[in-house]
Length: 152
Image (cartoon, rainbow, N blue to C red; front, side, top):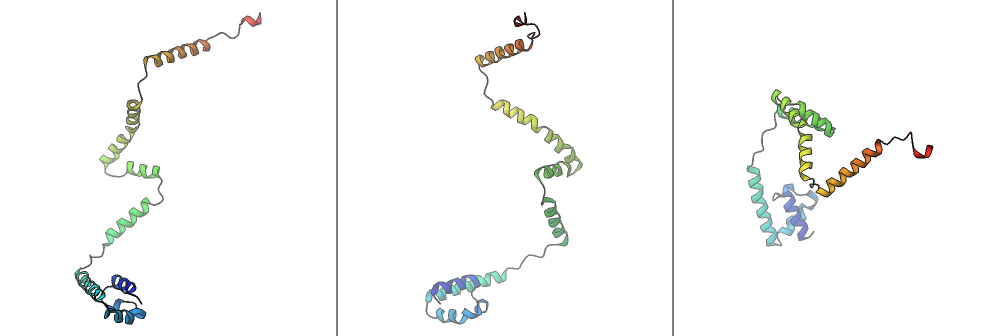
């Protein structure tokens, strides 16, 4: 038995020797008489034990609370994101069942607006180049391929 083990036992089990491991109890008590630091640590542990003993535990949860917690756990486990989103859209008060889908339908509009704002503006040269390319593609699309100079 060493001082570190005695400190560990007092810190883990408190100041009451009856709570200490039975097979080490006698050795710990013997070590206490040899060190003032250990005696001080034991006294601190006893004061902490007294404070903790005065604390009353909270009342047990009601049956309704336990049921609500278990139901919520069952509902959230195994859900994919889509299922959770659909549940969110359709749950709630009648007002929520109207407003949530309306808000969700605005998401693509907001995304498009954000992308439009974030996209850098085209310069005049880029616009002209795009127009010329579009004109060339249009001309190629309307060429009469049935009659050509090669067929004659």
